[in-house]
Each structure stands twice: as C-alpha cells, then as structure tokens.
Amino acid sequence: KNQVEQSPQSLIILEGKNCTLQCNYTVSPFSNLRWYKQDTGRGPVSLTIMTFSENTKSNGRYTATLDADTKQSSLHITASQLSDSASYICVVSDRGSTLGRLYFGRGTQLTVWP
Amino acid sequence: EADIYQTPRYLVIGTGKKITLECSQTMGHDKMYWYQQDPGMELHLIHYSYGVNSTEKGDLSSESTVSRIRTEHFPLTLESARPSHTSQYLCASSETRATNEKLFFGSGTQLSVL
View 1 (cartoon, each protein chain N blue to C red):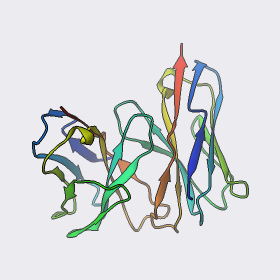
View 2: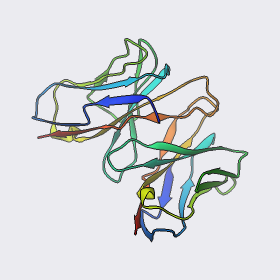
View 3: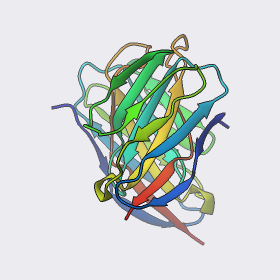
View 4: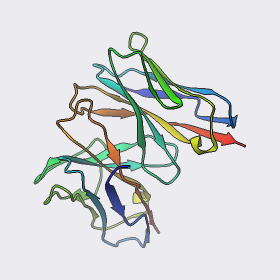
C-alpha cells in the first residue's frame, strides 16, 4: 500500500533553533517528493520538489534531503523564526514529470516560540 | 504568490441547503483539483479536471459535483449539505507542460454544516 508517514506529529522549538522533520514513504514507482508549508487556515505553499536523482535542495532557510534507496526524506529548518510556525506536509508523486497521483502525509505541526 | 482564489473563505449553513464553492485561477493552468482536508489529516482528492469539459472523480467518495466550462473556473457544488460535509475544501491548479509541475493552492473554504 502506497503511504507517506511523517514524524514527529508535532514539534515545539524556540526561535533561532534548528529542527529536522522526517518523511518516510512506500510509494512505488517513485517520481518526485515535495515539501509544502501550510499556515493555519491557508492552502499549502510549495517549498521544494526533488526527483529521484536529487539528494538535496534548498529554499532559503529550508533544506530538503532525499534518500531514494531508503525512501526517506527530511526537511531541515535553520535559525527558525516565528513565521515558520505551520504544518509541513510531505507529498510523493508516482508518475513522470506530468503530475501523477499524489500521496499526502498528515503533516508535522511546528510551533516556534519566542 | 499563487493567483488562485476561493470564495467564500468561511461558510456556515444548515442541513439540506445547496451550496457552491467557487474557485478561479488566472494562470491559464489546464489542470484543476479539489481536495478535502480535515484537521490533522492528509488531503484527499475529490475531483479533478484536465481541461475544459473534462472532470473526473478523485480517490475520496464525494457527494459533490464539479463543472469546468471555462479554463479559469472550477466550481464545486453540494446539492444537499449534511453535517458530514463539514471540512476544509482546497482548490488547486497546475500546468501540464511544466517540468516537475508545481501545484498551486487557494486559501481554502472552511465549510460548517449545522
């Protein structure tokens, strides 16, 4: 069964600290993996998209890594800010460059405290 | 910032009412989607469209219907709302020709059926 599991379910950190969110998937065949940020009451916004051949991709203070062999990805947030408080969703696609079926994780709820 | 708009943002209605959730995008994207999301849960695809006059049901069984008469407009209709329809509804769009095509989400409609 194709699944996307994220951990932890929720996380609280202090402003300025780093954190790492995890995503494990069983989706096959694998096309690409996406990380989205969803603020409360808003729609998700794309952070990174990685294909099979990409090990890491950065977007400002966000760095995503992918190990396609172990089917694991992580999202590292550096020097967290209050505005980083949101749900971070891992999404895996099972097709080629054309958007195939998407498998969504339940997200990690990150809270950054001052 | 994505140019995809959903109205209304919030809707509280009584059981049995007919409602239409509006979604419009100004990016000229051919693909559009409707997702349903409950708190702490993953997004579930309920409808999608690959172009004008093309609509398909998604993975999650839904009593709603959609239409795609114009490229930019993808409304979702519930003929008779029930409390079980209470949820957040997210509209999204993407462009077929883009490599690793990105999904753009609207801000969502939070529906409460009393």
